[in-house]
Each structure stands twice: as structure tokens, then as C-alpha cells.
Length: 250
Image 1 (cartoon, rainbow, N blue to C red):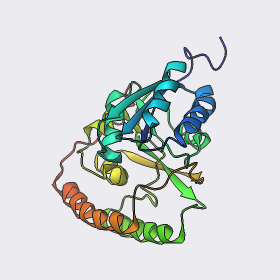
Image 2: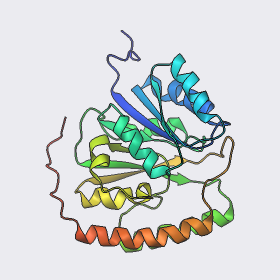
Image 3: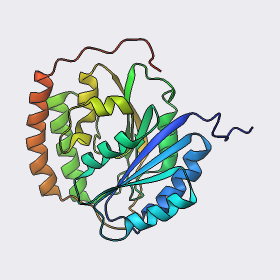
Image 4: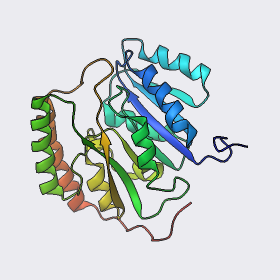
């Protein structure tokens, strides 16, 4: 056996939510399999969130070539948080990573983040967050992002400067135990901390999209974010959750 044999590599699921990413998803998946596949026994779940550009056909073709890739479809667009939940429910490993399908996230950064935990057990850490440096977004998005992150950190004290980054790792069962709502993915640090787990932040690179465009506008993101922020503040105050044990869980 070699160091890359699936029998001895640690297992890791990767959830890839996509919506109209035909110009980017195949290159991203092949890079993910090549880079992360040498370190982990990958279980890649691509959730097509109602694409209309043939994204699902591209992923399905790749899945027939490589058994590590699986495709799950939403018949209509339900949003990123719903796609993540569908992927987590379908994932097979104890820990699951999320990575955006547009190519902005570097699979090499996912590997670096996964090295901060043991994917065979769940201990005190319940979430590993990618924190983007040298953002490639336009000035408008950068300003809106900093304002939103500042307001959220002040209100929730979640100790995470970039919750919208697509690269994260979380125990699958923990994600599925969280209360579900649209935009859940933007509030994972605060919710995971409420459940008694620690957060690890890892600086990562931010790349330009391979193709396509963002599904969000600054105004739309801000309007929804304000409502969600107050909702999460209420939820955290009204939730009673037993802290996790200090013993690693298998």
C-alpha cells in the first residue's frame, strides 16, 4: 500500500453547492480530487441547486468517471444553506467540508484547514473557518462585507471575521443538529459556539471566479442579513443546549 491508498487515508466528505456553474465546476472538482484526494479518502457530494445551464450534466459525467463524486439535485433553487444541508445529509464521513463550486476557494487551503483537526474523531473543535485574505471582490462588495461582518461580530461575539467564506469544516452530525433557516451558513460560528464547541480560524487565499457571477447583490444581502441577525440573536437567547463532553467522540 502507498500513502494515498483509500484504505489508509483518513475519510473526509466535501459538500459542493452549485447553481449555474457550468463554466467552473468541472475544473474545480478535478482540482479538488487531485489536490485533496492525495491526503484524504474523499466523498464529494455536489448539490445542484436548480441549475439551468447544464451544470448537473457536467457533474454527472464526472461522477461516472470517478466514484468519489456524487450528484444530488434540487429541482428548483432553494439557496446555499438548503444545498449545504442536503449535502450534509447525503455525506458519509464523520467530518464534512464545504467549498464553493465557482473556483474562488483553493482546494489546497481546504487541505491545510483539515490538518487542524483529526477527521476520524470529534473533539473540542466543532468548526474550522476559512478567513479570506487579499479579497478579489470589487470595492463595493468589500465595503458591504466589512460592515456586515462588523455588525454581526459586535452583536453575536462569534469571534469570526469572515463567516461568508465558503471553505469550512464541521462534523456532519453537528451541522444537522443545528436549527435550519435560510442563510444558516453565515451564522455557523455563533451557533457552533452556542453548542459548546470551539472555533478555529485559518487564513486562506481568495481567487477570482473561474466563470459566472455572484448570486447575491449588496442590497439584497444587507436586507436579508439584518433580519437574519435579529433572528439569530433571538435564537441564541432562547436555546438551551447541553455542552459537549471533553472526551473525543468517534
